[in-house]
Length: 466
Length: 127
Image 1 (tube, rainbow over the protein chains, first blue to last red):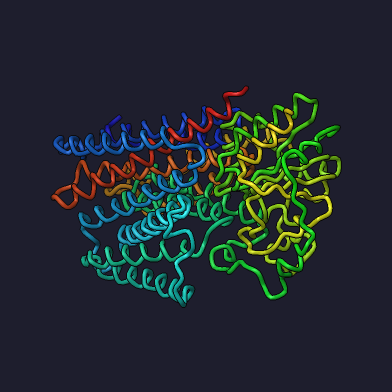
Image 2: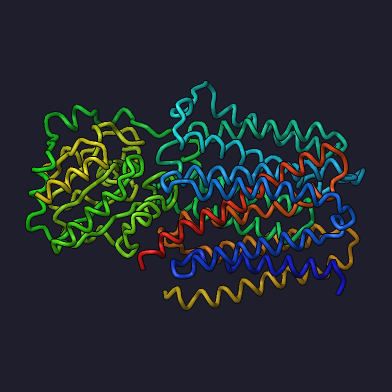
């Protein structure tokens, strides 16, 4: 066999590794092996690339590659090993963005060196533009998502400017027109970089208005884009492994996006371009809460657990913010030592990325068998003595079921209102991401515990031990 | 339906698809002087998309985050292009852009796989 065939076969081996690796990641038992298999596939692909004739002919180029490996490898390893579990969403967003930027740069380099076919549409140029544009949208979109998740002051609220949707449409059309121009006149490389600049602005303006509970959708979608960018790069390089790996990631990101949208009963279009907020028909806070909200102290709440047999804990973003997952685990252990059954209700969009709560609770060593999905936990709510909501709001709002005009109408919720008693740990009565009041807080069986999530749970544990 | 029964069948089917695509690709490659012909590339793209959709139909929510960071690491495959750009590229500009691409893609790959491994270790630890 000649060198070319061996390299192609190695790429095929890498592709198969990626497929089985991704498949492994869909089951708890096989996930670790799946991830390792993906890494092995990547190593195979890297080695095969290093043996490419173009590289072997220019041995001096290896020094540059090795330098890049060293810098990128060390930076990647340090950030991956240091990042706390609570900061995982922004870390994933950042890594994702880097992948997109790399695709843009690769497309640029290939177009600089490419001798375009004159007089007809050159597919290589077209895919180069696509890779450049999708990569740039991914990079800037992910950087902004990172800034939002890190809660940098300047990005805590969307930057307000008029005509947001028309501006997005104009930017999208501009990117398309520049692509057509670039394909018609492939020698003009300036057009490519202009398209990249336009796409960079578009990445920013697309993610700018999105926040809060919609972040999981955006992260999943950007993940999908980074795969598609790699895929388009594969068309530029005429390399099957990039096309296969890129499409796999594109498809998986897209499925996650769809799952997240379904969990909110909203279309992707509505998440990306819709305005979520109170309408005129939304009852005001005064109408909902007026004099009906009861708050309690840790000592009073501790009495609720006397004789309780079943407790369900509903974590939300507030648990992540106050890093309360270890305190929550201690509370679980304490309650279990008194013979109480404790389970967790995990809403798909609780937190800031898909599976965010699961990772935090896993870090605190809560067995994953105790984490239940909505379909499983909701029927058990009527038999639940105490439901503890920690830093969640919209995902337990009964308006989703009762008020068809509410912005969250139809969203599946954790039906804590059916439990005998509900304890809501929250810093204030401020609304959640949907911007609407929550009648649960005024329900007769609900007690508010106004405090920071971690402190509240620690106080409750102390009161229970007395 | 029992997922345990379906997945092995799906797996063999998906591998068949990819092998088929690669055979098409290789036959086409032999005929063409320059790399992968467009039609073969499109065939691979469409089939791989289907493979992606078929493998990831039912993911337990527990694994959403690791799946995302793990697939994210795989999208760092663009590193292959970055290596070629940096290693075989001619001219200073091309080499600078190439090395930059290698660094960014390498952060994506190394960081992505490591962070996923760390997370999955937490799921496994208490067993």
